[in-house]
Amino acid sequence: MEIELKYRGNVLVVTLKGELDQHSADRFRDNVEKELDKEIAMHVLFNLSDLTFMDSSGLGVILGRYRRVNSAGGRMAACFVHPSVERLYNMAGLPRIIPSYDSEVHALAALKG
Amino acid sequence: MDNWFELRIPALSQNVQFARAVVAQFALEAGDWSLVELNEIRTAVSEAVTNAIIHGYHEGSGDILLRGMVSPGSILVVISDFGVGIIDVEEARQPLFTTRPDEERCGLGFTVMESFMDEVEVESTPGQGTIVKMTKYLSFSVKQ
Ligand SMILES: Nc1ncnc2c1ncn2[C@@H]1O[C@H](COP(=O)(O)OP(=O)(O)OP(=O)(O)O)[C@@H](O)[C@H]1O
Ligand SMILES: [Mg+2]
Image 1: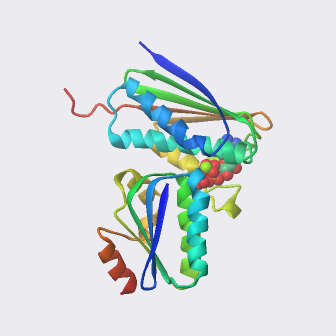
Image 2: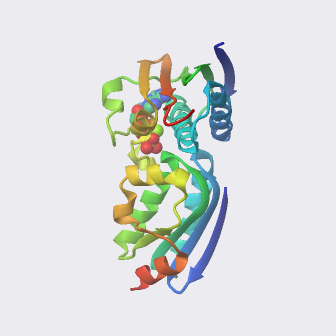
């Protein structure tokens, strides 16, 4: 799995590409934690357009980061949830806490608004 | 004609992707699954193999036995480990039940297997290991 990190103001944008499972979960967690420790980002946006696989190991890491961001008063959003990830995303109740948008621009607007 | 395979792999996290890819490829022997169905098979296999590594062997060494059997229109996948086993299978299968909340596990693995496959059977003996048997049937929609 590939991880790309960038900032858009106070939003950390995390782009995931490939397959997120137990093997890639630790690297994903460490990368995002390291950025959050810098205290630049208030909110986090996941761009999932090229994430072609995710299982419950990935869900656990996303929910763990959600707890941290949420308890610091920030919010999370996602954009382009890939069709092969969507069913799990919905099953875990993620749309309720990490709403998904059809573009990065819309998601950023929602986080900043 | 029915077809089958048997594969023994060490319980390493880098083998999870290999395991689900092998099963998805082999599943094609059963017929033309939709992309959604193939992805459901991949995800269910990923859950069972990950459980064997994380819970069965506590991320230590051990073997995982992966078997697949196809007949026209269905696949049976059997994933066995020879690790610690499960004391109360009924409880383990409950949504959100996990023995490792500290490690950010959400307790959804069995729930995913049950909703993505048509039948899931779990046999476990504490101290001896766990066998997960999952069957999926092709949904013959409007073909012909
Ligand atoms: N192969 C196994 N060997 C021993 N215990 C297992 C095995 N598979 C599952 N378990 C037990 O069943 C529980 C529930 O498994 P399940 O996959 O549903 O959730 P989880 O693995 O804890 O979390 P998640 O799958 O969401 O990351 C586990 O916490 C573990 O205690
Ligand atoms: Mg699990």
